[in-house]
Image 1 (cartoon, helix red, strand yellow):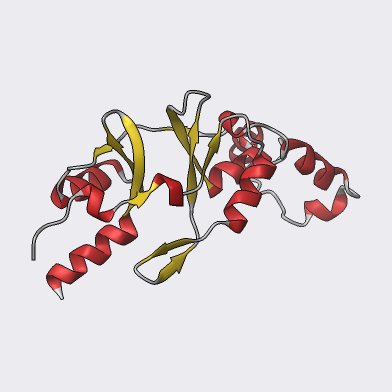
Image 2 (spheres, helix red, strand yellow; image 1 turned 135 degrees about the vertical axis):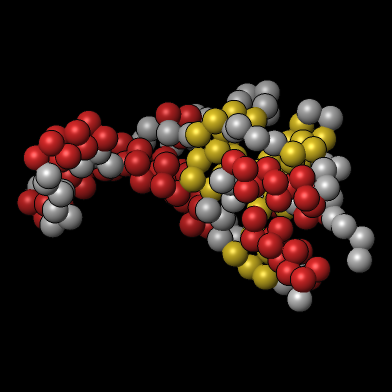
Length: 173
């Protein structure tokens, strides 16, 4: 069996969720809820999407947990984490019920923030002709489950760890 390249394993950009940096967290959630990725008759839900600027240049990635972090009320968020550590207090999830709708209202407000505020920068990319072992090394060395694939400087798709592991299992099993 011939070893695969990134272009053989990638999901084309046209089939992977992506959006401009000015889309809101609400739009991102709607996109993730409605997106399905089909690879070799297997359907999965995306865990993240790519973020682009006006010139369709890749800016970053937004994962599910980035959206959740962006929605988190400040009293549960990173500003109070130091206090929670200092006093060894955990936030009670039932506090949501105490706000009489104020917390839910605040989350809805925060959902109108642009995804550009919560996206993570892209630190690693692959070239379309990168070998399977290069892909594995990039994923393992950088603790990534998805890496964008470039051809001539433009994003053409993404390679996911689930698809890489599937390919490796064909070699091993």
